[in-house]
Length: 121
Image (cartoon, rainbow, N blue to C red; front, side):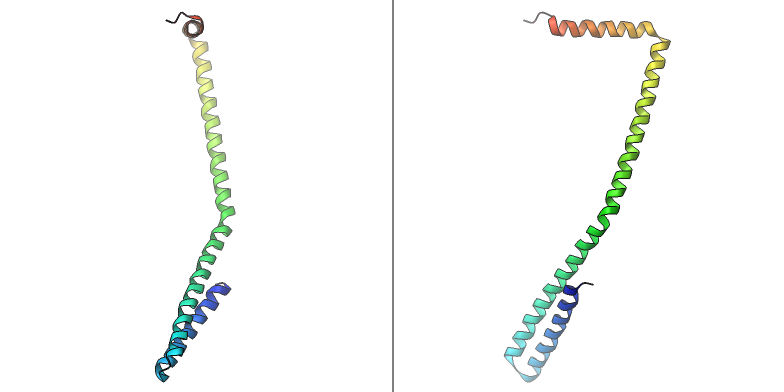
């Protein structure tokens, strides 16, 4: 509980008492002052609660940032591992069937040369 929550609650309560006294003695001025203090106290109390909520979020931000960093590091490690497994699979495939890879590379080179130097109408 911060200062604004406490002071707002106290002002609200004081306004309730002031309005009650105004009702008891029939003083319109005390009634109005009591209602004004109630409204102002409630507003200050709500402001204090909102401020506390924001402070809690700010206080929790380092933990959230640390968790996000850890998750990103884990994802990075997993992607590096997957890329390494893919590289190993391609290397094994190339060593197992080099003629197929050579033909694919030749076809890819021919297609690229045709795109770069071919006739276009």
